[in-house]
Length: 522
Image (cartoon, rainbow, N blue to C red):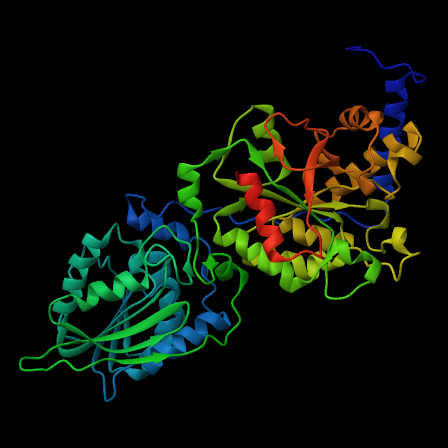
């Protein structure tokens, strides 16, 4: 009752004692707790009316695009390769950012004027290039300000996407041409974007990309394409301003591979091979009352033959996640699922809840990088007493699979992974007393909250075994979402504490996976 302590011999009194014991156990655990690193806040929308404020918000964090990555450095090398032959006198770099490319370009030209709309970026660029006497820096908004003229070379890369529309791009392309001296070169490097051509590999950005930019520049009076270096992800173009009497010749087109590794921040925006549906389109046009909740266990190339059903190869898992990404799906967590069901609110777009039971180390080694590269997420249900050990419940089948340790759980939580409870010992709950079941629910939840720094509200029953006690005890122990034995999609009328899932087996084909998920879409 409110305002009074429960009788110690009552059901709630015993629960309170078990909760106190669980708290004491977590506090006395030898492993120190570490705070979860906060995720970087999202910057303002690119269509912020004040472009200066928008770009300053980007550069509030130093090196916002990881310019020093091997991927960006390879792109810089190719931009240097495409420079015109012979001496270059006066050069203008637009959107120089923090001067990473400026430092490489400066030795190749007589005098370089490096500009950016952000004063913060310019100060960092000036400091980075302080030993190069032929470079001057200035704040300049190339969309609004007058450009210096009679330039032998203008560089403008990775920024034209941020213009409002193609009409503005056409206007500014004319400014570029007019700022060049006759015979001068304009060089532009931009990525391919799905909005230009949804059938080819591209970045899933809500803007035009390299194809539209190149076509607009080629249609600009006075400019002609001389050379293009093209990869699957981006193209680097060199245009020339025609001199009086010049005759345009066919451009030289070089197709080259990307050899540098692509970091997660870049990869998660790429849809390889094109898309069948874009997330923003399905979010605008589709609502549904069912959602696939996918259940996985392990992702590994090898393991006991008897457990093949519960194990996908990394290649098979990558094919499934790539299919989800290319077909407009986005991943949600159990909290979002709970909110939709509790409010009978239809699901927007094509959501999917991806779950993993047990917490194998191979999730961290194989599944998580694949998920992140496809801009997807997952919820992992941990067996908390065995974290850092192995799947002892499988010892009679073969060598037990290693489980993630607490440090790995912390790292993945900081990177955005979700975690829930698979109880403390992985024992089937029909073999547990009510007291032991409550103790496992409490102990497991508190340890996961300690490791992740976030509330834990979801559980999955080991071996999918449930009984009439589980839902009631789980709610009393602080859980709001549970996954039990039922198979199939979840819907707006599902019981939140006994939700169904769809097992994704390792002995089935990609076609089977596609048919299973498409059946939920209806």
